[in-house]
Amino acid sequence: MTDSAIHTSGLTKNYGSVTALADLNLDVQRGEIFGFLGPNGAGKSTTIRTLLDQIRPTAGTATVLGLDSHADSLAIRRRIGYVPGDLALYPNLTGAETIRYFARLRGGVDHVFIDELAGRLQADLSKKVKEYSTGNRQKIGLIQAFMHRPELLILDEPNAGLDPLMQQEFLKLLAEARDAGSTVFLSSHTLSEVERIADRVGIIRDGQLVVVERIDDLKRKAVRRLDFEFARPVAPDVFSGVSGLRDVAVDGVHAHVSYEGPVTELLRAASTHEVVNLTSREADLEEIFLTYYRKDGPVSGEAAPGQKESVHVR
Amino acid sequence: MFGELLRHELRARTWSALALGLVIALMGVFVFALTSGLSQAIADMTRSFPQALTAFIGGGSAGGYAVGELFNLIAPAAMVGYAVVVGGSTIAREEEKGTMSMLSAQPVARSSIVASKALALLASLVGAAVLLWVGVSVSSAGYGIGLDLGGLTAICIHLLALAVAFGAIAVALGGLTGNPGLSIGTAGVLAVASYASNAMLPLAKLTDWARLSPWHYFAGSNPLSNGVDGWHLLVLGLIAAVACAAAFVGFNRRDLKG
Image (cartoon, rainbow over all chains, first blue to last red; front, side):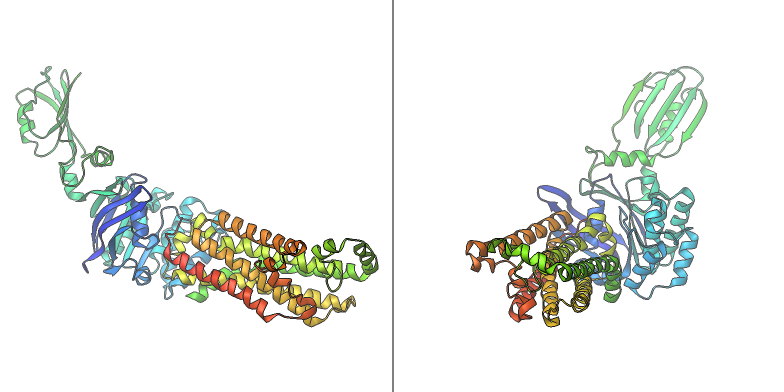
């Protein structure tokens, strides 16, 4: 288990008859950035709060940095940095006082690094927290999470309110943390927030982990699109029999095709007619995620989403 | 790290505790000034009251009606009210506001969080009680009321113990439930109901039942005249100790909110 930054085994949390987490088996390797994705209410924060011993599991166990999440919680919390989902700070403290308070609770924090973080995130620490915008409050949360260079960063939807420039800086901070050997567990409800930085992603839905994939593999699997323009109108069944097809729409001389896997067969079918123009569109990861998010989407072990072929004729 | 937690809590409590202490101390000064100037008129008025009413409003206290009102109603209501409101919210409000999520993710034990909050409340109540004691001691001497300094000290100590007991009950409810409204409401109702039962049961010749009320151990031994009652203070201390233990156990075991 020591290779895992986070390892959960059969982690289950029930609130009365409501199951928030169901038999969650999760493994996050040391040194990776792991995107933890799922719609609101899927169980992301419940998982994180269990790892932090803020709530206790109904069944199952979790280890963080090789330590038991409950018995060794204090030792774990010394070594992690955390930004909660709905970040709330003490309204009457200034940003600087807030950081100082959390730094003193930890002890041994490098104040030069705090200044560096504040500079990079352009955080104004002089005002009282109640006067801050959401984004500025979030910066305080991020500084306190990074300030002690933790071995593991657990960030629950940390992008809230950050402007695009700061998001860029935030991603840089994450990459630097990974380069320094730290692990990042990054929860989000949208793929675009983690797509650029995560090594792997796990998708949770209704308290169940439905898939864990490398981002690269997902991209390879993702649905791609080709738009054909033919010299003359083509028959609706022009691509029939081609494997990997997901969606075909034929409209006279135009055909819009979504497909998975190799493109050879598709091109061979198209080239039986005179192709005037061919446009390729970017792999659409979001679609694959949305499929996993939907209630009737596949669960782990089932076929990848979107295997069914459908043909539309306009 | 505990020192930092405690410092943070004390800082959060300072102004409210100072305000509480100054208000009740000033009330003490006014009451003693009033007693000094109008003692004969008040004595004549209360003498005409039925004995039961005089006992209920504290008219039989040393120093007379106004001093009785100060120590039986005004100061306890302020001290116990503060203890209940602060005690019931000190843990639970952090959960309601969401700051507990950050605090409990720091390398501090949950028991340290409870201890720092309980100690800060205790310090606030001690501070307020000391201000009251200074106010009444100085004004008693200044206005020539002639109350014994030992008696004034004793009633302030008993008052402090009463407020600590109710404060601890409120802290326990907050620690057990994480719900500030419920904690303050329950502890407040308990304080009012036990005050009423302590005042009324003896009038119905049910003096023994009044012993169930913490208020009995505040003024039942008449500390203003008789000095400190160690046993009564012990009872209030035990209530506080049991409540604190419940707060520690409850807060350690349950899921945190927020």
